[in-house]
Amino acid sequence: MSFSRSTHRLISGAINPVTNRFSAAVVATLAALVISVLGSSQWASADSGTTVPDHDPSPSVSTTLDAPRHVTAKPGDESAAVAWVKPAENKSDIELDGYIVTANPSGISVKTDDDDTLVIIEGLENGTEYTFTVVAFNEDGAGVVSKPSNPIIPEEGIELDEEGLERLREHLRKLASEARERLNEAEERARKKLEITKERLDDRLHEQSDRANERLDKAIEKAREKDDRKTEKARGWFSRLQEQVRRQLERAEGTERYDKLRDRAEKKLEKAGEKLRDRLELSREKTDARIEKAEKNVERRIARAEDRAENALERTEERLTRRIGNLSDRLQELIRRLRNLWIERTVNAD
Image (cartoon, rainbow, N blue to C red):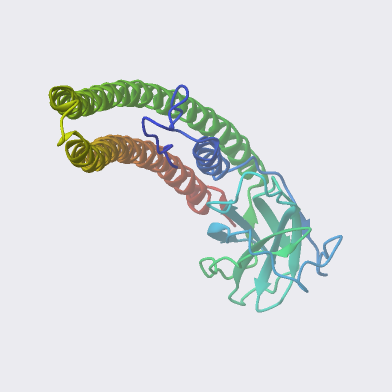
């Protein structure tokens, strides 16, 4: 984010202090926050074998995909249900093809689509303790592996209430949709707030630049008026000297001392002419120095004003981004807590 540096000599139109780069960065930041909200969930399952993805993401690593979060497991009879929350900050222009859920220690894995965040893994051994990890992948490869889930032990007689899980899935889908809508509204409010702030800072910069340029114009006018007075004074002095010499020569005309007086007069006028040129040159140098000093003062004033405007805009961006981040965190925490409810409410034991 930057503001254009402008002086009296460089300003040729309206100042546009906020660059497209800043606007694009804000949109990308807000979009990243929106995309972090949990997506809808659907079912996937595996039998005693391993479900292999259409393409194997393991040979390469995608540095653009963060780890899925809040991986939670609940036991069943030779099975387990596993749920998770999407990675926190995937960039808005990065596609996520799906997830791979892996049971440890058996290595049984299930591939899901990008909107599947709740699966049932079958083919587990009762009495064995398992944890589960989840990794997102796309065409570039696999991302960061999640932290292990809570440990669970499948037991005979524990039935997974699929209807309860289905109701939970629908509820979470609705909640995720509402969360996206709230974040979209917050994003729009933030965008409008930034635009209003930008326009207000633009107007203030225009006013400050206009005032600074008015001061510069007055300083230049004053310096040139002073130079004109000195020039006029020096030329007047030289004209009076010329007139004085002319009268002396007129009085001496026809006398023996005329030639001598004329030689002295020519030397005197030549010396005076050199002095006049020096005075005029010195006056011009002082005038240029005054104008240059005034221009630098204006440039510093405008630069300070632009820095203040830039800092104000950065503070506004940080404040709005923080607000949206807090909102996203609260929504994620709510979804995470609702996810965990199925550990207690959807297990039926004989």
